[in-house]
Image (tube, rainbow, N blue to C red):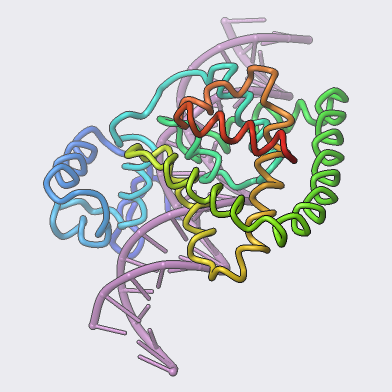
Length: 234
DNA sequence: AAACACCCCAACCGCAAATAC
DNA sequence: CGTATTTGCGGTTGGGGTGTT
């Protein structure tokens, strides 16, 4: 058995020392993120690229929040998990300063238990599931509508374009938009309703209870207004 | 005060996707 | 186009801290 701090295949493992952190920070400030495999050679760290990346992303990266998650953040996690499941990195994009690892750990220790004991939680999940099913029905109707109302579809696409901000936090929105735009025009028919479905279902659930108010901080007012409109029409 | 149980979280692993060659 | 390498993700582990008996 190889213990902490011992080397396996030449790499050091285990907890990071302040010296190692300093070397990694210096390296990233000089060369930027990425090219983790060359960190070892360039920074003089006896760590695997994987280990360096993880340390940077989860601990050293600037802007990381420390300490307990706020009730708002907790709410966002609950709602987004209901939509995406264990897509921790996706959920993390909506919680600036929080890492996927942090959210994953938090979920495990807090909600997994609660899930078992709390019927309330279970009820809510069932409710979300029910809403999703309803949305699926609506999706079918929407598809029919879209075939008649092509301009609306393009309007939504424009909204997402306008919603795109310079902040990294909007990357998921950007991702959705990209997903939509990258699809060829003919396939958007299939793509758009899925987006509607997820977003509308999520909005129905969280839009009014205030828990997810933090989420809206990432979108500009115009986008929020349009999204409310979109969801209302569904 | 000691033993035990539980919680929290940093860091690891394996796998898959993305990218480079 | 196929292979090798790198990167990113989700699941899991294990050690330290804290609470309970």
